[in-house]
Image 1 (cartoon, rainbow, N blue to C red):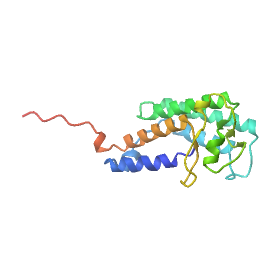
Image 2 (image 1 turned 135 degrees about the vertical axis):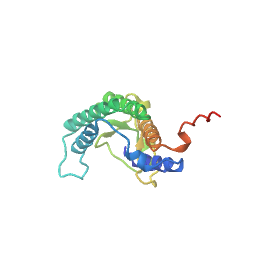
Image 3 (image 1 turned 90 degrees about the horizontal axis):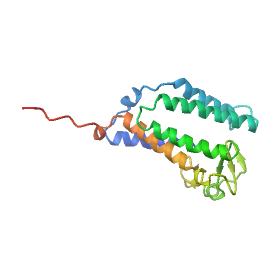
Image 4 (image 1 turned 90 degrees about the vertical axis):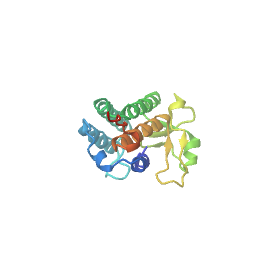
Length: 185
């Protein structure tokens, strides 16, 4: 799932609540190289026409799961940031579904149909009639007319909420700031 839509909504919400982008820029993330490494691994695993190769499915699944290891490590290092625990919990839910279904994230046929897509295996996703841990698979869909419409799992929703909280909180909105104690007279 691409979380660009969540990032856009989070920044907009942060600004509407009185937060500042400059506060977001000051957020000190630990293990940033792990995050870059995870993105690089996912691009190697699933170049999706962006890069001039295709990765063997078995190797792609192994690389993808390794990227989750880097993301989990970065999540642990940044656990003190509000929202990161939600992001890590969502990733854990997704990995459970992925591992239970042979290394691909299953999607339901109904969710694919709602986005006007049809495939058996595409990158990290597979359509299955009866996936294991069905409650955790990609079974909801954003309408096809929305930009970046996709299929979503409970893990994706949890990641999205965690990301929204992390961004809004890091922007330091006035509405969420602790109130100052009244001055003694």
